Length: 348
Image (cartoon, rainbow, N blue to C red):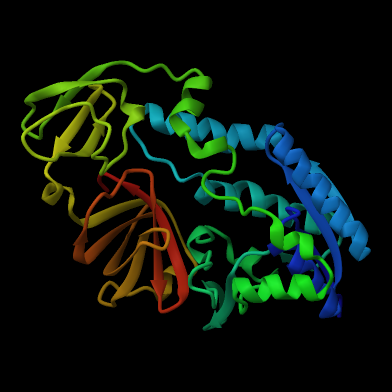
């Protein structure tokens, strides 16, 4: 039986520790690092990964994906804000760029398996394999991987799925890689330094066009500085002073209006999904209660799921949730299994 595995390496502690664990388990590991941007941080990532691979005696490759990343992720990110949509780049990047290319290069290098340093597990149910929660609830990354195909999941290995972050640090130290524990972890959107997405959009030429703040009845409440400066649920930094707190409830790009409302008006009990992906649609029952997450780590809500044509679905929430933004993702769980997900829309 072949034991060759392609490992996505970032040079950080998680993927580096995954490399050591795979080697210890008897796999022949080939490392690969993708360049998604041209900045120094991305090149430094490649150098760190290559150096770590050399120390472990692992074959390593660096692949330039900057053109693909710009076309599929960055351009979509910018266009989304033009149209009042709140994008979630990871939900597009994982299936269409990162794991797509891991699968492509695994085939090229004759690797039977594919691995990363994600804190998730794989479980089997009725002959299908599913992404499942990692043991460390604080690090669980199953929310980000709902869009992966069954063919790909069949090849995945996640060495850190049963580990806690502190165990990973201890493992790296035991192996003599103390420096890995001193690195800062990446947070937020990987291609935006400082996570100031508004400045990033402006640098890419997105122009702020002033328009009206209005209430749900259309009454003008003030002037906004451009719809991409605002997010659903935002309260601070609006620049309008009323006799009560108000929140952004809608972004209307066609009329260049930002709708403000009381917090109670932000709640929704029905979510409409498009571009859905489910591991096994035939397994789903409209009468069964599942769990949906619309924010990483922040919210789990009981729901029912109704599948529609054209990769659409309706999610009926058993308890309403607030601050639901068009373009964000809803990830559906049965227990700890990720059974599918989709992108939130205003209607079916």
